[in-house]
Length: 469
Image 1 (cartoon, helix red, strand yellow):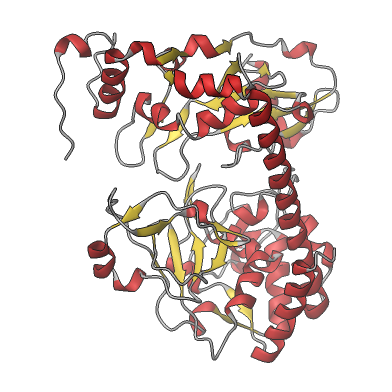
Image 2 (image 1 turned 30 degrees about the horizontal axis):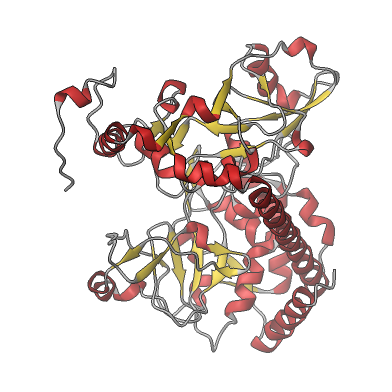
């Protein structure tokens, strides 16, 4: 339990009389040492002018909160007022209501709605010269940095992010939405020591950021090419059309986020043909591509994940964080296509770890992210020697290594044959989607020998490592 002492006089300085713990700590420190801080107005402006949609000429990119991923990179929907598409009519209706603004280069878009699930907190997008033709919904606050935009963008996401969380007005319940208004942003203060140091070294810091962003983009391209490598090899071995991946529509799960195909999906199916134990009439459950995937797997010969595991698939534990803890917590962001990222920032105690035997990481365990768009469906093998424990948003798959190759299973889930199944199996709506353990256990996988699996893995690994694209 958190306890603090404050005066009514201090609470009264905020017009809505906020007494929540984190906000009061922030206000108290800034009130006692005002000379150590810059105000929000010293460093930023807020853009407020709405755009008359009738002035938009031809094609443009429209960005809503759901079109920005956790890394801040946009996947906007391309629209064209001259050639209106029926499947995108809902976007045009929103735009015609006047809920649209145009971003300029170096603006920082910040979503004022923050899903309070601790993994998908707050979304940012910095507008670069490539994205200048972006219009966005009023679900974003458009922040204009007065000093070094590249640096201020990352400072908001890192050093000062806890301050953003502190000023958020948290909704009801564990999954309630926190909101940040424009007025709340004006309560932010920024350390003069940090900002002044940036101003002095602005060129050097900006050049470093540009270098790192370039490296990150190279890695993203490499990851994208990994997907094509996997699918090219799988399509050859399992004899299906390698262009199948281009028929996948952009969905909610990680594997489908690459695709820009957002056109309307439709299907024809008879009620007599719906024989699943869970009668589901969604397009993603009956889309022709899911049937095509199952036909491919039927031709190969298949089994289910539950046939190759040594214990039931289960999630990690909701951690009791300990600032003095030594055991890192693996969260959704740590599961990547390049393995488990080791930039751990939250820890639990040895005592907590010792009580959670089934969630203690073993080398060879497979981790699958199981909560929230768009990160749901990421998968990697735990190959670290150190102790660790995943949180409740990550599922643990422990396979019988005499029956199946963990590396093959990971590559399979990353292929179109795997992630299309994940897109079918999640439940929930908006961003609060889940992959449950029984659905993971029932995923269909190729029934081929270990020798064949290892042969495929070796070819994929060789091409990825040598970057033979």
